[in-house]
Image (cartoon, rainbow, N blue to C red; front, side):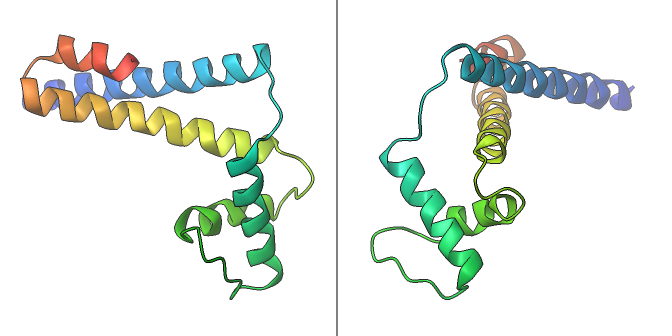
Length: 117
């Protein structure tokens, strides 16, 4: 009986992830925007880390640019990989909000509403 509860929870998490990911992709396609300051700087740091692993930037942390450099390496001139990675991270953050809401409030309904927001 306990396995059904975890299966139902995993199903909800998967649907929340899928809806969040598809919604973000839809928004990016409906309202395309050029990269702005932070996005350009992080992509530049990622590209610099590909060329020189010990690239130094005084104002930015290195975890996100290092993670981004793993995907920028495949297509340095195309921003599609960056958009897809950011969409996955956004969808995962919705799942994290759902889990925190469920643990804090004890209600799956409140957690689901929070996760979609």
